[in-house]
Length: 278
Image (cartoon, rainbow, N blue to C red; front, top):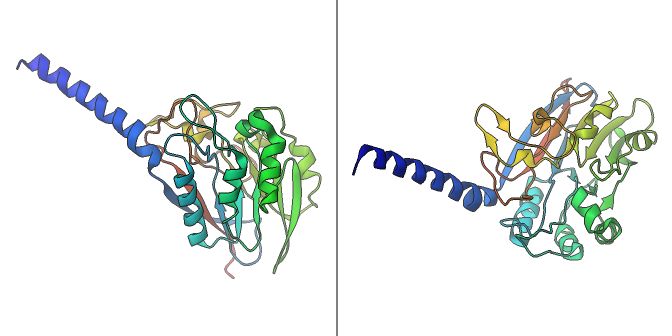
């Protein structure tokens, strides 16, 4: 075998291995991402928050079995509060659509003392926002769309705000934050990090999804593309240049192409505490 032939075999073999990993293995590799944040805007006892975004239930590798793994993992972490920032529905040529009632029945197994809350994503709006909202709320999951709610804690009221989806034109951050008293303790969830620049500075922490982390992240470069208005630097992790700490999760499912590379599915467990020792 010639040297040129060996080189071609190596190249094609490497490409095949990368494709097999990206389409066949990594999209089904669920990880629990543990984070800790000491926030100057937090007072009281530490709070554990679990976040699972972009479930896309029905996508390859992200069917009901994956959803049950997410639910079991979150419950095992025993969070105080659970946030689900949208895109429950998945519908494309690569998969069969799973209805929101079936998805909500599985999510009803989630348990947290302060409750389980959601926003809707662009895929939920495209499918039918009212049906998705009704399915979730019938199962005890409160949907916050440009709205805020006060939660009772030992340290006093904690406000949670949810912002509507930016891509479908349903985001109205001002409306959500107008409901929150000045200087109140505040946590925010949004489907799309495009709205992170609108966060009040009193926000202890905010969470977003939508980007899937880019799904494919090249070493030393990062995401190749993000959907919507967010820049590439806002595709994954703690994002810069916004008024409050904001974490963008890679989410669970996939969209457009059922591929992930260097960006495995995740749910997040964040331990929020004050900067002062308690």
